[in-house]
Image 1: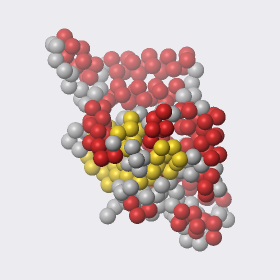
Image 2 (image 1 turned 135 degrees about the vertical axis):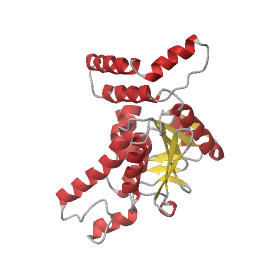
Image 3 (image 1 turned 90 degrees about the vertical axis):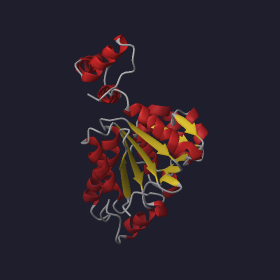
Image 4 (image 1 turned 180 degrees about the vertical axis):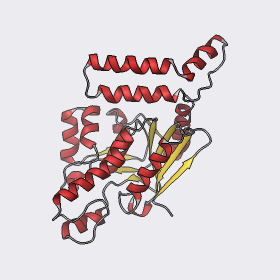
Length: 273
């Protein structure tokens, strides 16, 4: 079976499932490429208005494939992500291409994204979860910085996301200690939006995604663009960007539908336009 499964549902939600349960859905084999292709298929399909991401089996994503790392150290046959260590420039370029096609593409994705974290999200898998707009965690889930354990500095945007979410000191503590963050602590640190009973994760997570998908998703995309821009811009620059996106949204079908439905005292039916 494919390393990534894509299910486009009738409610506007596309569910992407990482499907290497035997390796805890680690980034190996065809998973990165198929994940990137699934994202692109969702981007180009106007019927997809929200993307949910989860993992098959007992983990969300274990990050780097340790079997591939052994090859990297020994100089043998290795994961498709990185060539042999004697080609440093090629190794860096390929790893950057992987990160851009998965983490950067997910963070910049123009539609809402929700991680349904069913188990461990470790190392780069934690970065994958943090790159989503929202995170719903099972009460059995955990976020694991993991990099200390394998003697590597962090990757997959973990430093970028953590520093913005919890600040410098907590970020460095989590990284230095190789911390395992249980679901309730993740909620307290604001790394999770919700924690739900494990057996209810898919039902409640997909219901949240469907609620988002029923909204004015073109405006949501502009909201996301504003927030992403605000991460590195001045207030004056953000106000300019907000003014532009406000005007684009005002000209859209969904804004007209919102006004009409309000005057007609009915629930709006948004089309994502």
